[in-house]
Length: 74
Image 1: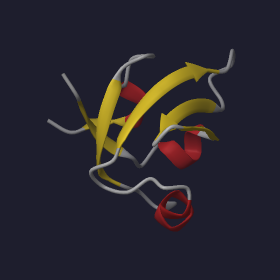
Image 2: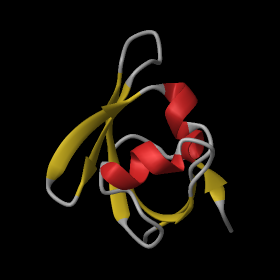
Image 3: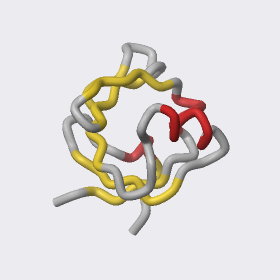
Image 4: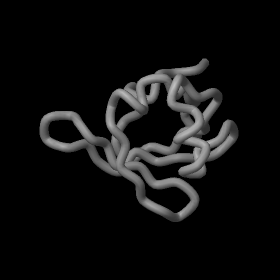
């Protein structure tokens, strides 16, 4: 069942199902459907979030990450 990016617990892996409105920028960062990402940490006030994708760590604004739909990886 697809979840919003915001529903990923810190430290869990998730597979990207689809991207939202910021898909051009996210594609340039290596976020594509099928890619495994991990939520590393969330800033104290919730923005930005740090993710790990393909061995690199990236920071995304919550507004950019809002449209990302994922499935948790067991």
